[in-house]
Image 1 (cartoon, rainbow, N blue to C red):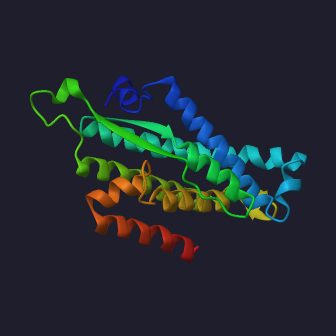
Image 2 (image 1 turned 180 degrees about the vertical axis):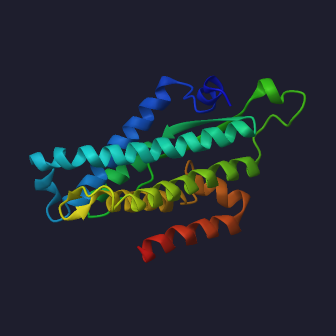
Length: 217
């Protein structure tokens, strides 16, 4: 695959998509920052300089995770002649921020919408995206979170960055596993809704894998 073809595979189709991805990362960065580092007194924490200090690495971790997940879904979707587009879910973003003040984060702020590549499918394939394609794209996204989380965990011995007594790579691992778990909630526009409609068994397997990683580590 040439560089041009690779860039076409992961292309974000509209500037709005990039904006919504960044907005989602900012919201989750704030939420995880409050829930993890400001749990004892969140209202005072957001007014202190430490809030910004801890927000920067948390935001970077979340942005890497969201972008990695969306790119993996885009690359896979192109193999089935589909396009996927990320959209932020405003109600989920509000809930994420509010829940962070209670010491946890409901990390369900957005999902992808899929459409067919009409130019390639017309006259040859069914134009509509099938439940199987949506389910596979969603499963790839959840799997990407799990892979990125484990990758961060493996970096823990190599990157000894400690924030409030916790290694940043461990925090990054936990964030990705939580993102995977909440993305599996079977509600639109989350991945879990598309996956459970296509295959309930695989949805359950992905939930079990995600929860097992939380319990094991």
